[in-house]
Length: 614
Ligand code: F6R
Image: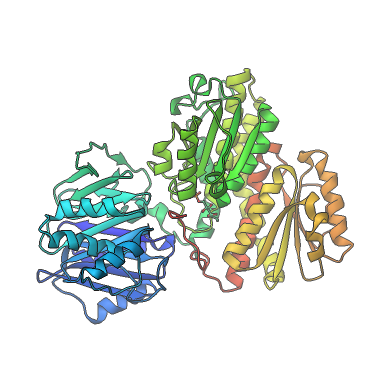
């Protein structure tokens, strides 16, 4: 989704804005623009296409006297096609205000009609432009800038993160937020705003988060936060522990590949400080997950979107098996518009890498309203979902830049493994076997070896199959969500139509798709018990219809080897750890196929990293 960067201070403004924009590219965009001051005038440079196009435009006519304050924006079109006119920033009628926006203004049409009737002239088809004209309208009535900004925000319906500069008030940037993320970077005699932390990492690690219904006024020297009624709000800063290298490609061709390879390290970090080796125990009590919090909980409701939803499905198998408590898993965009049955005996668990996904956030708020206890599993420290949950367990995967989520998924699954082991201790006094805890500790190094070993094999496989038009992914039990995740990875970055199914459902429809050119990826493991044999029967059914089979099976599964065209061995492991091993070859397969097809792996078409509008 759209990305915003803003700066006030003494640094050369254009390099700061371009650097920030480049670090927000991963969010997905179709046009880019910046605004700054030059000779006391506001100057906007914007263009359809990549930041590179913007740089070219600036190169041809470099504004030598450019200075702060300035704003930058990457646009992900919602209202109006990607074009130079629709790119942000947007001016008011007199070019004295410039504004950038991330979100959707739902009442823009009504506001625009009124403003046009008052003589305002619009230059774009965006919903955003109404905001800047609305502020101008208040200024025209003699209302001072800050008050005009507050008044305008109060009239908006929908989601927004907006930032504004005014040529007559060059000592300030004004920022407002409702449902779209804003993080403020604090510096020495300089301050920043951004849509996400990676944009700030080259400049500062001290950040403040803005909440919904708040406004921040940034000057070079200070940041003031207010609610929409104008009351000052105190906010403590966070120190970000991510380093700048973790948000760069570090020698890999793509962020996605780097992040696949980072999984062993990410997993190690997720475990750090949460395992007591002497006692064979997991400990989340420091994070607020204790008996007091869990008192009376009789069931779980897990809600998320996309890949995070798949991690939730894995959790259902783990929790039901290990804790014997009921678990519902739901897609956030469905949950929020139903009448889900929750009460104070329900623990609502929201999963979100970004912690900003609009539907997951709305679901969390709904769960709270219904009296459920709330816990979130997030990656981004201080994100909105994390802040609004009673308890948050961080996945500690480091920044995930690739649009296709990889290390976030494996660390979410690991967090649920730890969560399940911990609750077993806490609620039933049962410790995990020493052997299993030892295997947990070795998971990171085992995974590292596996990634290196399996990658060349997957590359060869991709060479053979990258021209396929359709693919099926089948699995049962805890490998069923991995089949869904494998199919999602393939379709989102390679644009091959891929379906994930519970293998037992194949006979109820998808079997009709099987033919010589449609590969079926089958996931099976003896550790899943009886369903292993059942999956083998499903594989036979594919085979007898001449469907090519790519099987992923734990070591020594000779039966599968016999009937498969391609065969990938996964190391023997405990049931709980299967998803982490099985997902890796599927991530690599999607990556290799997508690169062979010439797809832009880190920026898949139509997708955005952080889905902050519904
Ligand atoms: C797929 C992917 C998405 C996200 C989904 C939720 O590779 O990345 O499906 O998993 O948009 O995002 P978060 O976890 O940030 O809420």
